[in-house]
Every structure is written in structure tokens, then in C-alpha cells.
Amino acid sequence: MGPAGPTGPVMSREEADRALERLTAEHEAVESSLLALQDHAGRRLLEGAQLTGVTARRWAEAEAAVTRLWNVFDYYSGTLAKAQEVRERRRWPSREDLAELTQLLRGPRTLPGSVLGDGTAPPPAGDGGAGGGAGGSGGPRLTEEVTLGGLVEWMNGWYAQALDVVAAADSVWSALPARIDMLAAELRRVRSLAHSVGVRPGEHPAGDDLERTTEELTALRAEVVSDPLAFWTRAGGSSAPGGGRPDTSRYDRAARRLEDVRREIDAVLNVRQDSEQRLMRLRDVLSRADRTLAEAREARGEVLAKIAASEVPAVSGPATALQEELTAAAEYRRRSQWHRLSPLLESLEERAEDELDRARAQLAAVTAPLAVRAELRGRLDAYKAKVAQQGMAEDRMLIERYDAARRMLWSAPCDLRAAEDAVLRYQHAAQDVLMARHGGAEGGSARAEGVADS
Image (cartoon, rainbow, N blue to C red; front, side, top):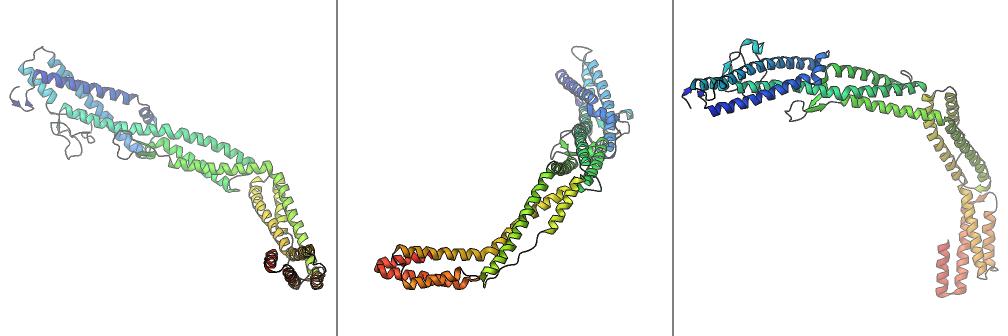
């Protein structure tokens, strides 16, 4: 080792060989990276595209960085070649050779203006090298001195900057335009189907959605092609070039909107295919509702004639509004106005079933007094049969009470409250007679049984 100089102690032969080997390997790595960047598909696309927005700005910066990178690489290559030449002069280098190698391989140098072009560069990857780095200045300048190691850090930083732009743009271009084109093709298919069933802009909400989605996809594709980096989301915490993913949120919204429209068009197509059967079913349901209401009106007249002192609800008329809408639906089908027929059929089907349920409920409410009378008649005859089984059919009191209850139940109009009281009096009398006949526990059991039956 020699005395200290401007670059520190003079290297030994072994140190010089190791430094030369390391810097040569770094030279080869940088050269390989540069050639790979030169052949990158994303770079070629960026060079041929009409860029706008953030991509235009960042690509201009990246191109300047690549230019500086090549210039510094050429300077680095020249310096390294000169060091190789000094080392190859003799097998055992002299002290002067080692001092020159030390200066070339470790010593700082001031770059000529032609290397950095504009005299400044973006912040390097490291600290700028041993000869005075970027420090707090924001980037290396012409007046700064830098070692070969510092140049490698600068080149790595510029390369990462350029690769980040190229890789991100390439990822967006690889992901989004093809998907947008596929979605646009599906949109054209859905729009053709929509037109075939009368779903058009200004006439149907789905037609307006198709129009908006078409405009959105057209604008989205143009923006993706001209400004891909506007659709790039950097991965959180990632410092690797190209670390992130394409932002597909606008595409995803358009795809969901188109899917909603497609389902609606499919529903309209289904209407076209089965509308006749659905209209027939609707006519049948409304007809059944009308018949049930007619039966309820007839039953109400019978109840009013046969049952006294009973509240009988009024029966509503037929659903004329539904019949009118059904006629309109048939007209829509005749004119092939499927987009209008579809929602009307769904509404009619729901309300027609409700109308049938309402008619059935009215019939049940109207005929309820007749059902009560029938239940009382059945109960009266059941107790009469029970009394006959016990040999008590000739009991005068029971005969009188039975005849009184029967006259009330089979007379018109029938007073249900009075008839029910008469039936209960007959039941109680029958229970008392049976208890008196059987006596004691048997009588209690019989009465319990009779109460349970009542």
C-alpha cells in the first residue's frame, strides 16, 4: 500500500484486480438492463403513442433519464476500458500503474457537460458515490465529483425510473384495451338485441344506459391508450419498478352496468317468447276472480234471505281497471312493443293474484254465517244420535228442546244467536239426563265427555 493521495491509499495489485472485476460485472449488468429496456415492448409502444396527461410528463422525464443513462454508461465504459488498458500493460503493475488505477477506479471525477446534457439529473438510487454525492441538493450537478461506483448508483436510479414508467404503461395496455374491446363487442350484441325488442335511447331507460355505456367505453379506451399511467395504482410499500396494478374501477362499473342492461333485455326477450301464455294465464286468473265475486254476490243474497241478525259484508265489483290494462297488454303484444309489455305483465301478474285472493276472502266472509249454521246443525244431530244410543230418545224434555232448536236452524231467516242458545240448552239437558241415568262417577265422566264434545 502506498502513501495517501487525493483518492486515499494506493491500491495493491489484488485490490485493483478485485475492483476492476467488480466494476466490469456491474458494467455488464447495466448493459444487459439497457438492452432489455431498449427491446421492451412497452418502451416501443410509448415511443409510438400520442401521449397525454401524467404519462406524457413522466415519459418525457424517463426519456431524458434514459438519454443521461446512455451518456453516463458510455463515459463509464470509456473509463473502465482505460483502466483495463492500464492493467494490461504489464503482469506486475508498477507503482505508477497502481496509482493511475486507483485514480480511475476509486477516484472522483467531474463529468463533462455533454454527459448530463441539461446539467442536472433526477436523484440517484444511492448517495452519489465517494466523490461527493447528491446530498441535500436534489440531484447530481456538473460541479459535483463522482466515482465509478457513484455512476453505477446514478445509472441504477435512472434505469429504475424509466423501467417503472415502461412496465406500468405496458401492464395497463396489456390489461385494459383488450378487455374494453371485448366489452364493447358484447355491448354491440346487447344493443342489437335491444333494438330488436324496441329498447332504444329516449324510449326506454335500458336504451339510455346502453348509450351512456357506449360513450363511457369509447372515452375510456381513448384515455387508456393516451394516458395509461392515469390508470395505474402503485402497490402500497413497493419500491420495485412497475410494482402495482392497473386501476380497472371505471371498466368494472361499465361492465356491471352492461350486465344489468343485458339481464333486462333478456327479460324482455323472455316476454316476447312466452307473452301469449302469460296473457292467457292472466285472463284465466281474472276470470276466476270475477266468477268468485259473482258467487260471493249470489251467496250474499242467499245469506240475507236465510240468516237473520247477521252482519253480511258487501261484495265489490269486478276489477275493471285490471281488465283494461290486460287489453292494453294485448295491444302491446300485437304491436311488438315488448319493452312496454314486460313491466306491465309483471305488474298485472302480481295484482291479478291479489285480486283472486281478495275475491276468495270476500266469498269466505259472506258465507261464514251459513258455515256457522251448518256447524250448529251438525252438533245438534250428533247429540241426538248420542242420546238415542243411550236409549233416551223418547225423553219428552229432550224431544221438546231438540224440536225447538231444529225449528230455529231449519227456518228462514235463521236467528243464529237464538239457534246457538237453543242448541246449547239441548246439549246441557242431554248431559243432565245422561248423568242422572248413569249416576256418580259415570255421570261425571259422561258430563265431562259432553262438555268436551261441545
